[in-house]
Length: 330
Image (cartoon, rainbow, N blue to C red; front, side):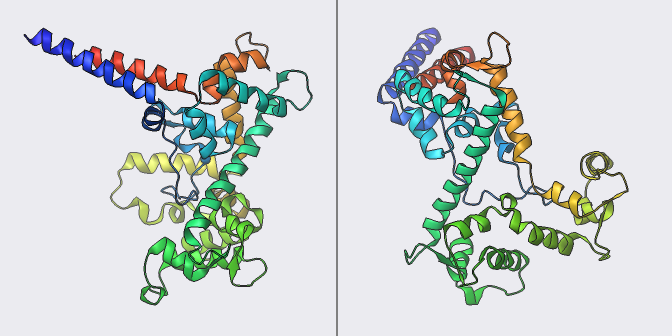
């Protein structure tokens, strides 16, 4: 009797999965999620901005969404590709390859792929910023005031907000630094500087000043290890302390003088898109350079199109894996 129930359960699961596949959109939305962050300039625990590729691998699991967005330069485009038939996905990818191929030799070199990915990162930041500007711009005038940002970010009447709140103070400083024409509003370009100061060089002096204000307790213009860990050390064990000391000594303190100067502080605060793009190039080459000639032919990329862009076929492969996992568990 137990065996019959198990078979029925498997059959129902398979029918459900195939039914989801047939309607495409629902399955795609379920299997491939491209979450939009309300603030991409999130901070990690030590105060640095989170790198763009932070979620590429999480919990030992690879997330293809990052690869697809790194090629398409748009969360919305990546979501659209997830719903395309395989042949249409390949056709559109081939059009992109012709644009990516700067020397028109029908191969994608590492430098060409890296340049394209860096372009995509910039486009993703612009898209994120435009989405948030649209949310914050309550009077639909195409720009945002400080009060509109307060309402959008904190959801409270500005008069009820504490003027000395650290987050609000830093936010207001960022707003004024981004407002380059000092008219009290941020247009789309200025708003991108506000939402992505870590990708806007003219905002770096502010980021440095805020980091020193926050951590440089002896006001000597440097950040020591004790200042770097600050109150984060409370309740932590010796192993955590040793890990943080290694990171400080070997990742952040590049000249080995036991403290972080201005350049080292900015290097710690601001993630390098160059490094992230290089890592992504390595990842995509490892997935698709079948003849190991250190360049990608159009055919190799199209053969491995699922590593570069999504399609319904990618979703279907995920459905089959779901079925296999389900049957193994039973």
